[in-house]
Length: 403
Image 1 (spheres, rainbow, N blue to C red):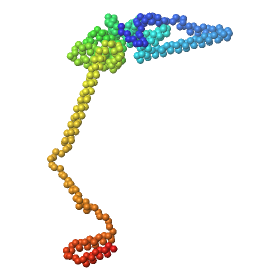
Image 2 (image 1 turned 90 degrees about the horizontal axis):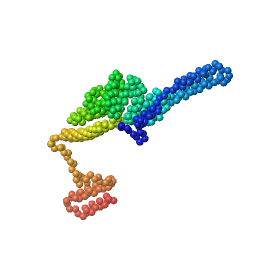
Image 3 (image 1 turned 135 degrees about the vertical axis):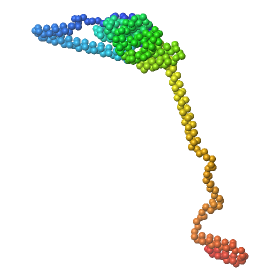
Image 4 (image 1 turned 180 degrees about the horizontal axis):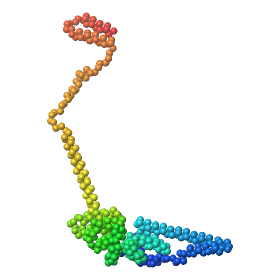
C-alpha cells in the first residue's frame, strides 16, 4: 500500500474506515416520530371543537405555533447541513483533499438521519482517499456504497469501475480482471458516457499493469482521445499511460526513434490537461519518463539556442561583407590624376608693405611734403655743380615754407 502522509494529516486505514462507517450508518426515523407534527395538528383541531374555557381555546393555537416553529427550525437545520455538504464538495473539486476528508469524518454522525446526504458524503470520502493514494481505505468506502445500491444502477456501475481502478493500483489483478469482464457489456451499452470512458481507462491501466505495452498502443492509439473525452481533464491520466507504453517500447527497440516521439506527443497531451506533479502523484513509475522527456527538452532548447546564435552570427557577417562590397562598387576605379587646383603663392614682403595704408595727413602737411619731394627730386636730378648761393637760396625758401 502506497499511502501519502503529511506532517499534519495521515489518511485513515481500512480498519478505521470500516469502524467509522459502521458506527455512523444511516438510520431511519420511526413512523410515529415523522408523523408527530401531523398528530399534534389533529389534536389541536379536535380541541377547538370542545373548547369550553379560555385555556382550551388557546391551547390549540399554542400547539399550532409549536409545530410551525419546529418545522422552521428543522428546515434551517437541514439547510445548514446541506450547505456544509456543498462546501465539502467544493473543497473536493478544489483538490483540498485533506481538508475535505477531515470535514467528512466529522459530518458522518450528523447526517445519520439523512440517507441521501450520508451516501453522498461516503462517495466524496472515497474520492478524496483515492486522491490521497490511500487506495485500500478508498476501496472500503466504494464497497460500502456498492453493497447498498442495485447492481445494474448506473451509479453502481460507475462505482464498481472506480473500485476496479483501485484494485489495479493495489495489484489485485485477478479481482480487477473479473470485474472488467463482468462490466464490459454494461459499459459498452453506454457509449460516449463517463461510464464507458472509465471502463476504457481501466482496461488500458490493466494492460499497462500486466506489461502488455504493444497491445495497449495498438488498441488505443487511434481512438483513445475520443474514448476518454467524457472524463474531462482526468483523461490526462490515460494519455500518460499511453506515453508510458510508448516509452517502454522505445527501450525495447532503441534503434527506433518513432516510439520515443510518440511518447513525447502523448505526454504533451497529458500535461496540457494535468500538471506533471498530479500525474506523478497518481503513478510514481512515470517519474522515469518525465525525467527523460525533461532532459530531452532541455537538450533541444540548448541546441535551438546555439543554432539561433550561429544563424545570427552568419547573418551579421554576411551583412558586413555586403556593405564592404557596396563600398568597393561605389568607389571610382579610373587611374587618371585628379585635377589639382593651383595654390596661391604666399605673399611677398613687398606686397605686405604695400598693403599697409599710410597714416592720414592734413592738406597743409601734404602740400609741404609734395614741394619738398619735388625740390629733392630736382636737386637729385641736377648733374651740374651748384654754387653756395643757390644752396643758400634753396635753404631759405624751405625755411620760409616751413614757417
